[in-house]
Length: 402
Image 1 (spheres, rainbow, N blue to C red):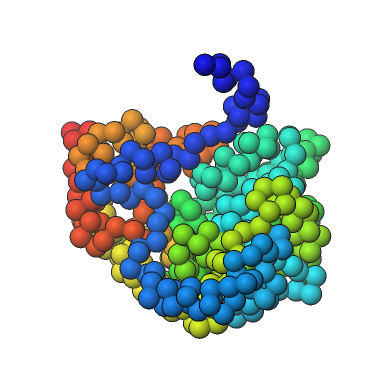
Image 2: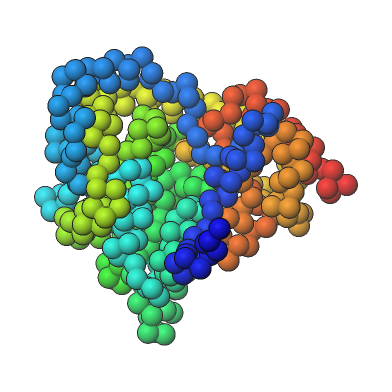
């Protein structure tokens, strides 16, 4: 038997397992209420409509839909996607292009591959999306965090940090942000801070990577304008996904931005997977044209608002003395901070044994602080599971503080 370790490339040591993916393994097959993964509610999947579309696509477009496609994506789908984005107030300028990716995670990977070299600097929100941190780490990018509050990333702190770094001879290349219904906190960047962030990008010659998987699910407020729509200089690369607005099993996402950047991402994608699923692109195209995507968004938005309200109500009833938490204006998540110094990662195995799971908050921090935090997902569990799960979680935490 070969000693396989000696064959592995050095970069393998920089690969990090997603704590959400590992959590899904731990809870699989167990009677556990999971607040872990950011899964859409399956009841939002319009299965009959999608089945009819899939059949129609294969019968009508089978010669093309079952064939290889250009790396950027099927042209008629890309044009349909641009129209969909424009209708949702995402600005598509004359110099913009779009590339279809295998989920928005691939868009983030391709952008990192083509824009971030070793020791390049990216600024991120703190806390932020853990899979983004893993990608940045893989490319040896220097990651600098800036805290968020209830109004999103603190752009005044960001401004000070940019000036400080510049005085040290450090040029920041990118800012990665999830401005609407952020993962993991659920907070939404205020309009004033959006304007400030765009101004800072111009003043300091930065690019903004705008990740927008949850922007379609805002509740009491209108969807804020994407940074992409506020950008007049071509500084925003905008990522999106069909995973939340149609179904994740199609594995379709996109990047929209300046054509020069999209062209380079296209070259990188040729060496990764050649192109994303042709069949999925044709199905998504028809789902847009037939109003299935719009109907899914509206159905999901109302459902997720109701579930969010239930979770917030249960937290107020059972955990007010134990923790503080965000009150998201949209999206999938509540971020909870315990009032006592309890390590939520160490607590997780006991929680799973007692029938409830969450994602420990440390995974979302650059330096793995936030040991007393956790992310709770409300989009996937049923209302009854949310009620039972929060009560179980409160009982577990209360046992630790008594």
